[in-house]
Amino acid sequence: MRNSWFLSIGFHSRQRILEKMKLDKIAKANKSLWENEVRLGCGYTVPWLHLDRSALKRYVSGQSNNINIPLDTIYPAKLLKNVENKRVLCLASGGGQQSAVFSLLGAQVTVVDFCSGQLEGDQKAADFYGYEINLVEADMRDLSCMQSDFYDLVFQAESLCYIPHVKEVFSQVSSLLKRGGRYRSAFHDPVAFSLEWDGVRYGLNRGYRQRELYREDGGVEFRHRLDEIFNGLLDEGFLIECVLDRSVHGQKEAEKETEPGTWNHEKSFVGGEFVIISMKPSASPAGKR
Image (cartoon, rainbow, N blue to C red; front, side, top):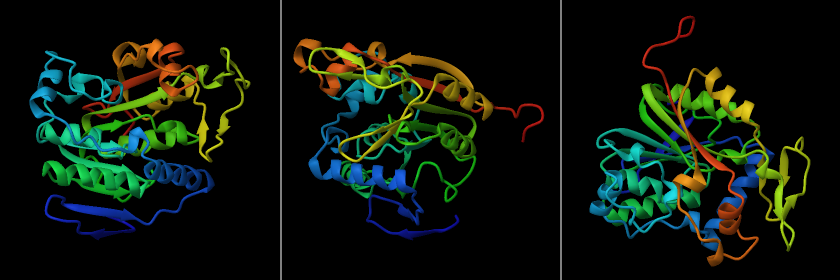
């Protein structure tokens, strides 16, 4: 491993790798955003400490959806099948949520996040349930500290919106995956990126060519066009297995139970979020290594 150092963090965790990150202005802004979200107790930063292994197994087998967690953050269930003893990387997905699900199902889990507070959530979940975990504090765009051709599954939550160019991450993921390994990535519809609640209705508030959104809380998000997303995966040699609409396959929040203009209301009323499952081919295409 290059440019990294190691710190032991207790019996239940193998190691924590702290990469000496060189963050650009955008990354620094978003790292600050998420460290603050941890302090505020944002829902995506709170570890899931109420999970039941039996309920998770019923969910994975299709027998039940009653697992008391937002299913849109962990779907599709088929990715959770047969993960026991498999190497799973939760990429830019800290917080002690997805990592807890995979670990309780028997996977060997590594979490990468550039927010130390989020990684503390993963450690808290590991200590609570008593499993081992690897924690890596690094930028998703530079994973050179990690072993190539190593992971069976890379699971990425809705975090690609915080970087300007998704292909930078696709390249990193392709290097880390074993042949035959899968990559779960999540995106926002590029048109929905322009929609915003004005107090009465959702309307277009920025032109399609505008890619950046500088948020009031200091965070910076980016619009990614469909050609950039799909061609980016194909250019890195991935095979696209399926595309899933979050509003159909994930948690279905009732509009009447959420206040207009809130995140949950926008997700149920506007939609526009989707997941791609892609695979690194078992054999190298002609002309590629």
